[in-house]
Image (cartoon, rainbow over all chains, first blue to last red; front, side, top):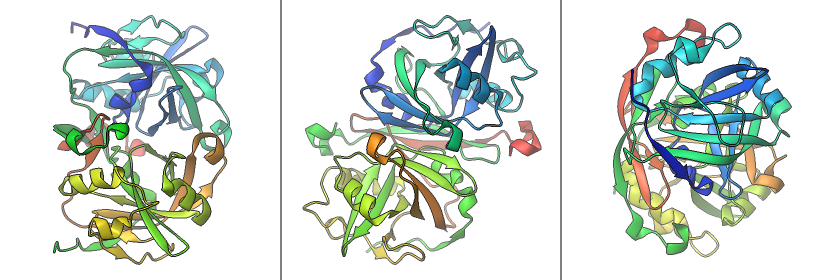
Length: 186
Length: 186
């Protein structure tokens, strides 16, 4: 059994640190006693404070219906060590599959929402639906991150970035250009 | 002088190939004879067909005002070779700077919009504003990609992914899990 990464509270206004680079995420949800997980790559940060994130959760997904009702979810950040799990989760449906059981993932209790955290992930962002104005027209949910949990190490986890066609780009080297930024742009 | 990459037409329904991995992009625009460029990391794919992309273009940017009026832009994909240019563009304002001139970039004529393509970038996606419903509330512009130009090589360009704080993650190795996907999920 894999040891779960130890996590600490993380400022919600800084979740762009993990989401702006564009990783694949696992979105967990709960409705009427049942949990679900989906793999998602269509996400963007929208605001620092309140901490807003937009997710395009396609209507064809069982998670769309659950999250529309529950109005809560958790955005979990998997590392490349979970690649096959990420793919497996994206290739079956929560309508007929208990994904936590099937993929032997650890459902942990969240602090502020009723959806479960995925213990194996590097970070977990608890979200409440902030605005559903574009849910019917574009399946675009605007969430507020109300609590963030992040593993202290590694500082730069290997994340997965999906290109379509079954192919992922894994995050690579880190470069700093901090010295070239105006202080107010950092 | 750098040789500009040779580009070919690319299907607009497949731009997720380049945008879903979450790269930093350069957004070029034109209004009343003046051009501008901004660096942007808050973007997401929203639909395959029509080819929809959402960009959060903060109100503080000169580009916000120009694009709101012009209702068009070009999303340009820089590679890591352009890192210092990407940072420079993000740290000055089009209100008092001609960014094409300052950064010695080549403005090329687009096929379907009035905004210029950036010749030095790996790909250029010509966009028309599709829906401004969330522009006033979230500075979130929904664009339709109406024409795409992509360099044939390299197949996997080194892209930049911003983490905040002046630090970029560069894209790394490519892994395929195509064999694990259901055919209808590819």
